[in-house]
Image (tube, rainbow, N blue to C red; front, side, top):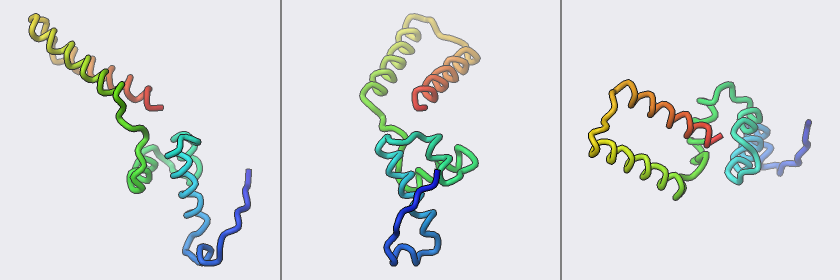
Length: 112
């Protein structure tokens, strides 16, 4: 779909006014939650998620704030680890890595 937007003359004189307008739309749309990261990635034509992350970071736009629920989950995981250590239920390095990777995967899925 194509959209036509009138721009004031001073904005139209910039080096790339269409790109600037599209980026502003993407930033505010993502920040407000109106559009998703994959949709933002398509708008300005970023080829990789890494490029999108750099773009958002450069504009101080974060995917999602760290919530109280995130903190509570992290505290619960930490306390569980302490209880296992105190109970002599320490796990091996390979299993620890596996559990950490599983937690990372869960975290990534929760941010999509």
